[in-house]
Length: 378
Image (tube, rainbow, N blue to C red):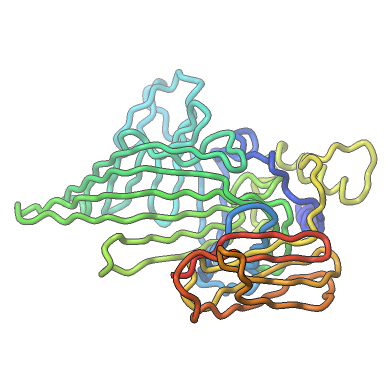
C-alpha cells in the first residue's frame, strides 16, 4: 500500500471538470476505519478551476482521531434500530450504517443515490432529523448544486428539549492541486462545499424564555481520485448573532492511513491505473480523462478582504508572473511583477487596507494564460 501511495503523489494529471464523486467509489462502507488529525484552520480560498491549496505548513493540534463505520445490529432477523428509527432489513435498496466518532454515534442511510444522516446520539445529547439531513448526493459533479430542507428534534443533557430547522446547500465548487500537511502533493483533487443554515430553539424546562440561535455552518471536503473518503476537511460555524464568536477547525486524513484500500478493489484499481499512466505503461486508459495542461494553479484569501490579501500560486513550469488588481472601470490599482521563476509554489501579499469598499478584479497572468476573479473589499 505504501508503494502505491508514493506513486500517486508523483502524478501531474489535473482533475477534470467531468470528475465526479460517485457511490461506487465514495460511499462509506461498514468495517472501514478512518484516521484523521486535527490541524490548524486555514481559509479554504476561492472556488473554480486550477486552484492551489497549500496546507503544507499547518501544525497538528491532535495527532489522531478515529472514525469507524459499522452495520447496525439486526433484531429478530427483520429490522434495524438506528437511534429513533426502525428500518426493515428486507429492503436491499437501503444501506444502513453507524459512524462512530468522539464517542458519538451518527446514524446514516444510503438510499436513492444519496447519503443521509438520520440523527446522532451520545451520553448527553440525542437528535433526530425529519426529514433526514443530506450528507452527499451520488453522483456529485463539478459545479452542480444540491439542496434540501430539514427539521430536527432532540434533547440536551437528556432533559432539555430543542428543535431546529434549516437548509442544506451542497456544490462541488473547485478542483486543483493540494499540498498536504505531510509535505506531499496531490494533483487530482475536487472540493465539495456544504452550507447548512440552522435556526434552533432551546426550550426552557421551567417555562421561562426560550433561547433561539441562528447560525450557518460552512463545511469543505477535499476528495482525491483513488480514495473513498476525504483527504482534508474544514468546518466553520458562523453565528448570525454578532455578539457570538465564530468557531473553526480543520482535519487532515493522511493518505497513508487509508488502510481500508487493501480491501477496496475499486479504488485500488484507480490508484494502479494512475500509477501506470504516470510511468508510461501502454494500453492504459486515463481515468481522469483528457484536459489541457494548466501551467498555473492559484488561490487567494480572504474574500471578502479587509486588509491583506494573500495570493498563492503553483507553477508547473518556469514562467514570469504578473498579479494585478483593477477596479470595475478597468483602472489599474496595484500590480506585482515577478521575474521568471522555477516551478514550485509561491506566495504574495497585497495590502488592500487603503482601498474603498467594493468589488475589484484580480488578474494573475503567466506567459501562457491570464486568469481573472472578483475580490470584495469590506
